[in-house]
Amino acid sequence: MLSEGENSTVNNNNRLPKISVIIVTYNAAPTLQNCLNSIYRQKYPAIEIIVIDGQSTDDTVKILQANSDNIHYWQSEKDNGIYDAMNKGLKHITGNWVYFLGADDELLDDFSVMANELKEPDAIYYGSVLSDNRKCRGAVTEYIIAKYGIFHQAVIYPKAVFEKYAYDTKYKVRADHVLNIKCVKDKDFHFIFKDYIIAKFNHEGLSNNYIDEQFEKDQSSLIYENFSFTIWLRYLFWRFKRLFKRPVNNSSD
Image 1: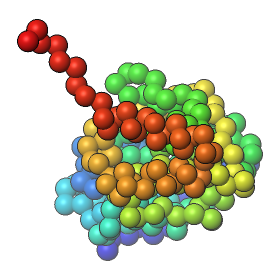
Image 2: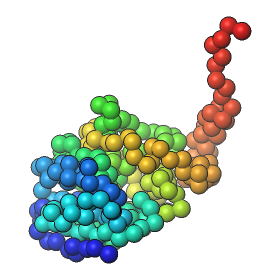
Image 3: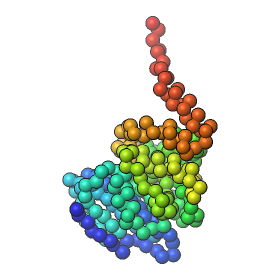
Image 4: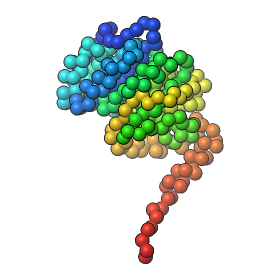
């Protein structure tokens, strides 16, 4: 294991709630420095950076070493997937708020604007992301959370969420969706939308190219357990249409 340990010199301001930004990396050398730079550019001063690397074989570790003065904590060791690495990162947060950023994503200026509006310690704040130069998702209903979820790069969580929950690692790419589904039902938390585009999201990552079979099996029961009966029926109807929809035959035969 490689580790630079704790670093107290990272951006901080005792008058503002601190945001812990967790980045999970594996062979991220082509994009990692740009990701870090996007955090350094933020006007919100109370940000700490935590990087959990899955023992990269490229120059990722060299980049982390070069940036160690600005990183609160980093380590490089084998892990059991994205959410195992995220759970590891959560063990090192000291912030009031938690945000997850992909190593191939970048923060936009509105992140700092939204950061200044984090007021309620039991609220899960979310905005929008930019993908292919398009604003993605915006405000969502409970039904949309149930069916599609929220881009994790759009969400800033109060630390209390992770004092109660961890990511379920049996889900390879949809554990963040499962977490949000559970938080909808949890009366200790509520969701607040802020109309800011806070990150540029790279849509070519693992989560967009991998089908989480366990989640596909469990989604219906998760919705049944955490949402209203009406939302569950609506989801089943949508799923039925998707499964049995036939392609349109445009031939003249």
